[in-house]
Length: 397
Image (cartoon, rainbow, N blue to C red):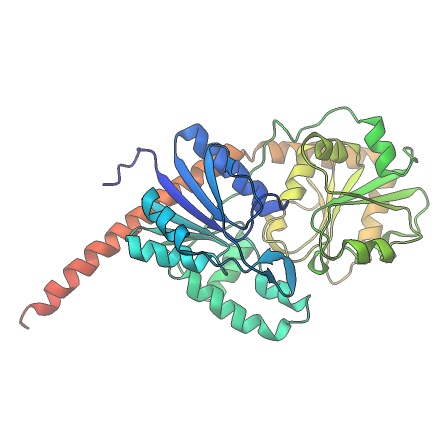
């Protein structure tokens, strides 16, 4: 039934997708592109408002109200037509991405169809809850996520730090799905004077620090103001958007900080290339894809020593860490890069070499191997289930 080399049919249930822009969506887009290259067939069920198709994959929007304490996410509840479409598609495997609202339906459909499941963990929802005044719910959220993930034949996570945490919380069958980026797109190149002027607010000779990502409480962006300023000749660009965007603009009022909004494609690459340093204060990242993108554009990274980014940055070699409990170190490290341009160049060059070693195609090929592993695990469990009644029915010796 499941040839090891034949193309697969994969049904994907994801809580987030285009037009939203974040690390999870970036990974999903690369994943679908690689499936198309390899000849695998996929169908994606996600939130409404996305494109009808991406990289040859049909995209089916599933509606629902917005999540109360995190309005960028929806409580997506599928109707009967989703089950009909899944059963028509006849997948070899169902992949639930960050199962929370929509993912449980994917797990349920897999049981009805008797096909394997793979679940991938991307967002530390329990930790996020503390930033939205719902920290008391963290134990309940961990229990809920553990219950969902432990129904899957294989669970994937994006970093060794997250793997350790999930196992500590009782998640089973957890494997490390490595991360990579498109280094054909994210690569060094000449600075665009217009982008440099835009991000420095017309002061291109100043030292430019950037951050790229979602503007939300768990990202720790408010910390930047008091630890970077006042440093004369320093500029900050916070690229992105999200629920805290307007509050951040008010918080940074009176500082040399610009908010260019979300940048995509060539504009995002130009923004990385325009920077002198990339600062990543978040302590909640399960991986931190943007740090790798910055490295690929030959920009030195300063990051909090926390979460998934510890698999990317080697302190003092290809980037710099600061202690999350001592955020004042951010300003010290920025000043160090400003005063030591040769050291900055060394970190940038080593970061570039590391990023080039993380091929996105290799990471997606690893995912396909995990799919095949999930299929093997499922088949083995089916065989054990068939054998048990026979054994139990035998008379005792």
